[in-house]
Image (tube, rainbow, N blue to C red):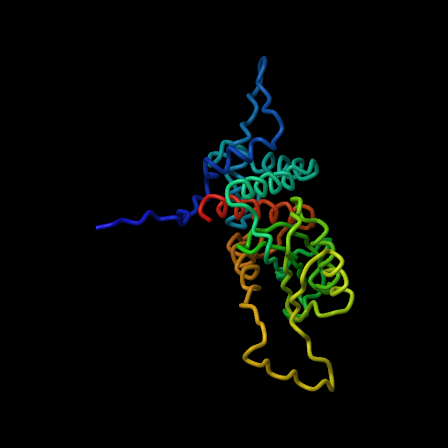
Length: 281
């Protein structure tokens, strides 16, 4: 009987970063200091990243982490996380994973999609706003651009009261890898059906597929004839990627008052998705 190998990733270990992922992450971290003389030896970066990994998946408070879990105190974890964020290392980690994904699977440039997701932000802070879809509660929004397989290639954060159309151009022009010169399609939902978005997508060299938003007093669109050319649904991949990010509780609910710190969590989450897509397809 023929056996099939399982290509799906195993269940997540919240206490330890996968070995293959760690080998790529450590290349973007500062050089590990060596202890000399008396005093405590420096804490290994692997222990720190394991603690940050735990916070990413569980969404717990920093001070809820016990020293015996990872051999590092919660204050040191938070300090290292913020220091690496200020040095731009989480963005560099996401870029490295994108290059790794491009090398292993090749980026599927033909069809790309953009979408956003609003999440609650109970503690407020910068880049928050009244969420119109959550009874006006404080919230933030993730804006993301993905390729045909759902690999995240650009990500931004904003307040939940910001319109999606203001970030379409920023996402397109902040893709973390160089686009290839080939025919590329861009899929957007009706929330992006505005003239300025159409212009940006056209100037960026895409063939646009933006779902039409029916205006007031506008007659309904005629049904397509059977011979008219239609394309299959393509926007579901970006919604699936947002669902993958939503599994990480530090992203599902924004507990960071600083938008830069929350963006760092989102970038780390995107890096893990790129890593999994590179290995498992």
